Length: 334
Image 1: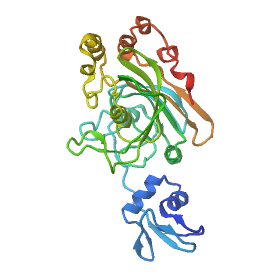
Image 2 (image 1 turned 120 degrees about the vertical axis):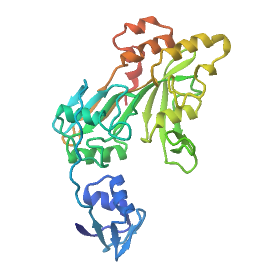
Image 3 (image 1 turned 90 degrees about the vertical axis):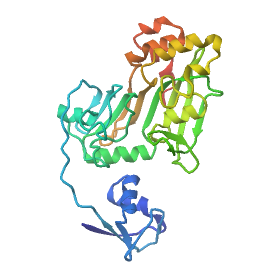
Image 4 (image 1 turned 135 degrees about the horizontal axis):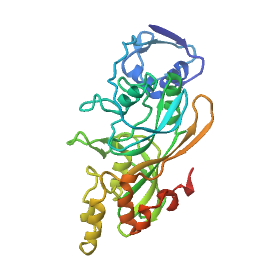
């Protein structure tokens, strides 16, 4: 199906124009442009093209495909908010978010289907309802969209940085200053394709980190995303010399970074970290349909309590009901 629009605003970028006219995210609009489905005077246009007043733009919409069937799976999920438009869940570690090679039938999407949760079509095939991701071994708050309207508006809010995503991270070493803004482009590693790296020419990426608590060999950080690139927090913290404790891909030495005299304690900490010590602890945004402000929290997960207690040399943290609140993590919520 072809749609024809007439530009009424002078010198407007094509991708912004399409996103506004079709109620799409800039990413979705960019995909139509990259597929050469957007033309003017018979010629395909670039996303950066500036449109003059009176220009007629033709958009060829792809044919709708038959909906993909997802195998239902069953697992326990904890929800912190849910209505007919969206759901926010506290994702456990070890759960892949959407189907892909090696995980076609055991992902969060499959569990939601098994639960009977209605999901939006999604902006990418194979990712119904998925507005943003968490790595398999990262726990914490994740929002999923139930309707296409909610999905489009949430995706747009993330692009406008109107969704605040805050993580708790236990990292090796100490921040040189706090807070710190890490502005470094991220690209796929040229030799190890499953990893990412800071590289010139990569995608723009910004991470904001602040100290919450300083321990002997590690810092507990409050990390806020400015952008949302693959493995962004893990890559950026490693880039500034503070890799996440327990991260098997980006640790760069781990306990071996610690001086030999103090290494036994660091090795105990490393042993007690079953995964990367990274948790999506806070999520705030305006509800995409009602406009209601939502500010949601998730406390420190049980599987990471021993590592935090070891790092802090405080056994009381094992019994503390709200470790993050106890340590003042939420005191500076945006």
